[in-house]
Length: 97
Image (cartoon, rainbow, N blue to C red; front, side):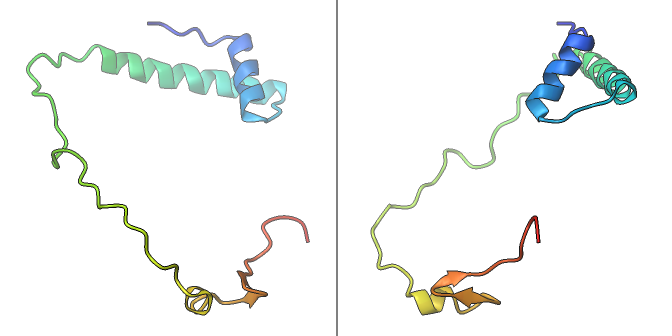
């Protein structure tokens, strides 16, 4: 399956990514996408007929029983936090001052 990287695709990806590209950036992204897709098309050409299927090393997911337990006491849960306030962990600001 060949995917054509055109202006419409780049604009759609720009919209989905919530970014705004300038003309030159759009062209660079278009070229990068074409290179990436060309690489994947090379993978499609590999002869894998002699390759044994892989398997998960653990047969089936071993699930533990879901048994209710008493919750961790608040003071113990907060004991390793650098800063706390009114029973909550205080973290660094991530944006805005």
